[in-house]
Image (cartoon, rainbow, N blue to C red; front, side, top):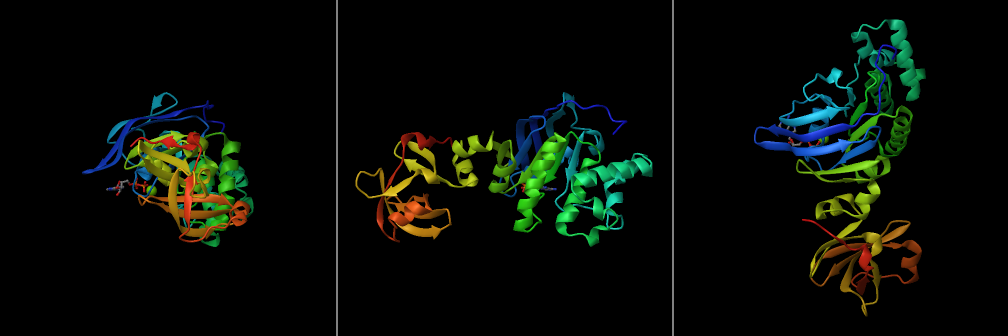
Length: 332
Ligand code: ADP
Ligand code: MG
């Protein structure tokens, strides 16, 4: 908007950021830099501190310790509207009695901007989410997906440098989820601002992120590009959580290996003997679960064609092999 200062690329930095609720340590002194204009997913199981982290960045939750720095300025104690961040809530939290366009321009109205320019701005934002045609409807006249787009447009009205999204796709059915996911990615490209998206879905994080931040029990377990995290999980937790990996205890330590990098074949000359415990057809691949003699369970993804060349059977004795470079030693 005309009266806004011009923005420059800005990194968001968390320094020893901590949140305590009584005896619960929800966020445990995390340090992280979110590069300006990146799409970052905070990924982790329920209760690991993702939403608390996001709410502290937004200013909806007080910081117990540590600081939040955006573009060189500390914002940790500023009110939400003065941080350069905006949050889209999981519940969308639209005003039921206001039309779509008035929902989107509500914040502008609060800032004393006249109806003409604020509706013009709201139309621009509604155009971005493909909702101009429904500008006069009320939220209860919209589908879940449409309400979500309005909530997105409303969050954008303050022209944030950082958009915060807490499980933005979780209320959508699977078909719509994929569509809106692609729209989020497009929106991120067009706006060029930083998106921080909280999710417990590995697929979502992989599909969207420039950077994945895996959280566990209030701490950052690992951060990196989706490919780096997928190909070199640093801990057993990350390997298990990211999926399509096996965690394997060998005589000299604990390792991870991608499920598609283990071969199932004859027992002779194999690295590890095992028994087939389950076979699941998945279309492009067949997931073969096996159990080793020391009761470790692994899943091997075999390409469909390859599986049906020499089909395996339940309870069959097999041998597992792999290339040494596909084993990754894990930290604890
Ligand atoms: P996530 O979003 O990863 O599921 P949260 O950030 O919501 O996790 O929660 C992290 C931890 O903090 C959990 O143990 C949760 O029970 C606790 N917690 C979250 N909000 C509150 C609150 N308002 N009061 C007390 N404990 C809370
Ligand atoms: Mg949450």
